[in-house]
Length: 107
Length: 114
Image (cartoon, rainbow over the protein chains, first blue to last red):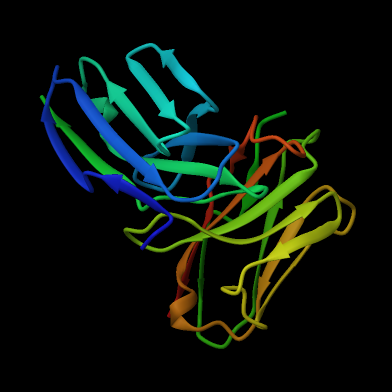
């Protein structure tokens, strides 16, 4: 079993839809990153969470440390949100990556 | 500071050749990480440095791979006798010690072994 599981693996949506990506992990962590990767490779950190909830614009991330679960929500999705979203818990001085969720938002 | 810089962006090499990649981290970051990402997969940890000390190496890092950070600033990752299975995106990231804050990735070096 992988240490980090994301669901769904692939997601398609119509512009304007509310998107949820889930992440479950089995290791103890001090924090968790949500990352965005566009075609071509560049990775951008969207959030770093150690508890509760954070919001940046249309993006919301939540984490429940006791349940070892985090979610990333995108409100009013837009085609420019199309990317791979990766959950990456921070464990023993390094990030452990999920395989990512490929999101495609169609106009 | 312009973030984490990686060079080259792309490298095509023949099987059996040696290649070297460079990563320049954010200047005040004392931690530097190397990851490898193959198509359709999330990044996999290779190794990391705290200042010039290499603190951990993954079992993925075979004897053909070596990484250095001689002065605690930039780092190099060398692959000797490249194999087709080494084709991947090699990502560098940097951060401050003992915190996950400010974890910043470079754009990566895409290696193709032909």
